[in-house]
Image 1 (cartoon, rainbow, N blue to C red):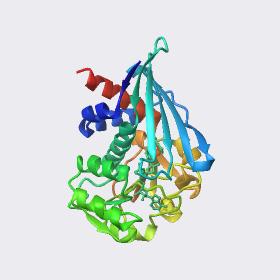
Image 2 (cartoon, rainbow, N blue to C red):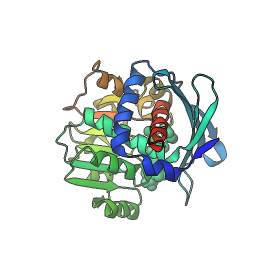
Image 3 (cartoon, rainbow, N blue to C red):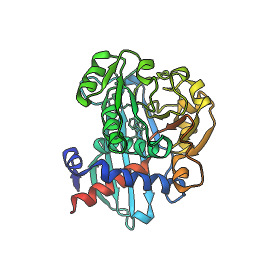
Image 4 (cartoon, rainbow, N blue to C red):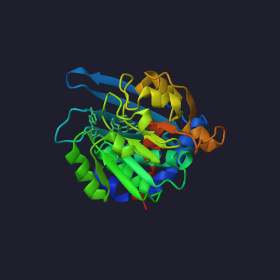
Length: 299
Ligand SMILES: NC(=O)C1=CN([C@@H]2O[C@H](COP(=O)(O)OP(=O)(O)OC[C@H]3O[C@@H](n4cnc5c(N)ncnc54)[C@H](O)[C@@H]3O)[C@@H](O)[C@H]2O)C=CC1
Ligand SMILES: O=C(O)C1=NCCCC1
């Protein structure tokens, strides 16, 4: 069976091709055009990691796929996330190919945040703050700057030298504290592996948009409950948010809409209010990203 390695995926996949596909994926998901259970998670207690199983079917795309993804937050010297995606024939169930899923996980997550930001942030947003300085911090910088012209990009990380490293790479400003990084920011991205809040309500300006990307466990949260409760909360999937998101569960915050509903026009995108987009990651995002990679490779 064909295996498509990470360097091949990286060679063909661009944010300009991926962002519109992620918009379509989110719309189809919220329009009941996708068959997708909430991901199954096996916790690996000894190393405090997990294996997630993420299947999805989009019949209109002729795509049946599943991602297998691991998140081992204590990994040192190797990435904390690893993944493969398997694609199957929708008529026969025959496996067709296996693809690296790490690059897709990295890029599609940032592409989804970019789409959410397009619908929920002011189009004249000038200051971007990134909390965290790992893989997703870098991909979010790339995806968001492909859609917005920021005057200033600030980075905070719990290790200042890591924030400095990333700030140097992207010509941004490294900040000593998260509160300094987010002061007056229009768009904030939280991409840490922190189990406790890194972003507080009183630091955030009214009307800011927050992409809350970390904290994918029911007992982890990145956003202080006061901020969750004073913001309009959007999610990728309601079903997943009430099962997997500590930011939602521990704050008991009301979910206003799935971001796909905003795209479908059935819910408002509140650009002038403080908004949180709680991202957990959807199997359909991976399935349609893999389909895109396959098409790009066959050109
Ligand atoms: N919503 C989604 O679809 C996806 C979410 N994620 C999540 O996004 C987050 C970032 O992922 P990556 O950048 O790939 O991970 P990474 O391991 O490359 O970077 C993690 C960052 O979090 C920081 N960090 C770790 N523990 C911390 C703590 N206790 N307090 C403050 N900062 C801490 C690290 O210093 C580093 O800057 C993770 O929580 C990950 O699970 C990742 C992929 C998809
Ligand atoms: O959607 C994904 O892929 C992931 N989401 C949460 C963290 C692990 C990977």
